[in-house]
Every structure is written in structure tokens, then in C-alpha cells.
Amino acid sequence: MERENPRAERQGGITRKTLFKAALIATPVPLLAGQAPALARDTALSGGPLTPTPYCDDGDDPTPPQTEGPYFKPNSPHRSVLPGAGTTLTVSGYVFGLACQPLANVLLDFWQADRNGAYDNVTYNFRGHQFTNAQGAFKLTTIVPGLYPGRTRHIHVKAQAPGRPVLTTQLYFPGEPRNNTDPLFDPALLMTVRTVGTGRQGTFDFVLNVPGAPPTDSPTSPPPGGGTWRVGVTYQAGDQVTYGGAAYRCLQGHRSQAGWEPPDVPALWRRA
Ligand SMILES: [Fe+2]
Image 1 (cartoon, rainbow, N blue to C red):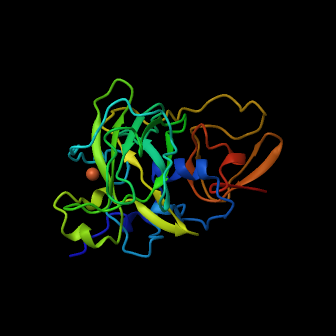
Image 2: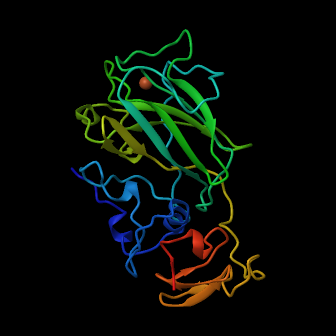
């Protein structure tokens, strides 16, 4: 039975995460007033039903853990590209804390089967670790893992914020027939996956059990370039500000934050 999608009721709203991502994605497509930014994982690009993946929304649950399985190997290479034959797959996204703050320098250690469903337990093929950047983002380039007996298609990962416990979990692919029969499968761990050319592009956002306050919103001094825009101000659609010598009109109401300067957030501001 298809589960109710908690995201549906949010489609008219704006969450801290969607605004954060809108600022980073800097989509050139202007939004209509009142619409939340259209993000890859929110729009069922795979053609299937929207997945009930936990949504980082101030106080939401962290990404659920899963068993490590028998094939983890420590000391994987530091690399974000896992070379090898197969259908190219990228997996990208962000890592957030419980307060939806992006987490930098999070260790993400991925391991998976090759296209035939076999793990390399001798060397480190299809194993690698990386760290989220200052914006909490990561990107893995690999191949679509093959199937092996008893399991649906999946990628293993360990995620650890600095000084915090390790989250061990797995990521899943939508539309896989074995998702219905694998007892480990958890729809909360479905990636959004779309086909691009001959490859696949997956997205997934982790929410780690890291407490913390959301970015501070206190009003600050004028921006370096001068202007009337300020952090910590509640702007309404239609409001006008200046920043760096240019005028901008607000496209949708929000409370401004550092990192959402008008030139950088076309989802929120348009040159007037
Ligand atoms: Fe596995």
C-alpha cells in the first residue's frame, strides 16, 4: 500500500532546507510567489510516486540506520569517483543536522557491489570516502551496483560528523522489483533517481543526529558592498532592496539569512 507522502502537505510552504538549497542551487528559473523551490528529490523525476524520505524540517527524525552487512572494509581510499565498468551513477545531496543546519566535513564512506553484484574484499574497488564541503554537500560518482542473492539494489554508506557517532545505513533505488521482497528495504532511504543519457543521477539528503541551532538570524550591519538588504529581516514578495549597487525585488516572502544575498538567490530575488 502506498504510504501517504508527508511532503505533499508542504508543497505550498517554504522550509529552511528548501530555501538553503535554493540559495545553493541558484536556479535561473524564477518562481511564482508562494511556490516552494522545485528540488530534484521533490518532483518525482523518476516517474514514480514521491518517496516518503524524512525531510529535514526543524525537528525531523534523522536518517534511519541499517545493518552494515558483511562487506565493509575500513581504510577506504579518499576519493569521490569510484572507477569501474558499468552504468554511470552519480549520487549527490547534502548532510544536515537536526536543526537543518548544513554540516561541513562530514565523513561519508561508500561501498557497493560491482555491476555483477560482487564486492571486492581484496582491494578497494567501489569503495571510497569523502567529506562534505562547506555547504554540507557531497557528490559520489560510481556505477549502478548489480544485484546479488537476497538483496535489492543498494549502496552502503557510513556517515559521521566530526566528533559524532557513526551512522551506518544504505541507500535504495526506486522502482526496483526486489524492493518489495527485501526485508531490509526502507522507503525512507530511497534516493531520487533519474536517467540522464546513458547514466543515472541520484540525489539523497542525510539528516544526522547532530543537535544545533539553525543559522542565526539576528540583523547585522550593512553588507560589504553597501545597500539596504540585511540579514534577519522578514521580507515580503514585492519588497525592494539594494545590494552591491543593484536593486532587487523579493519574489517570495522569507526571513533573510547569511548566504541568501540577493545576487545569489534567484529563487528569492530578481533584479528590479
Ligand atoms: Fe550489500
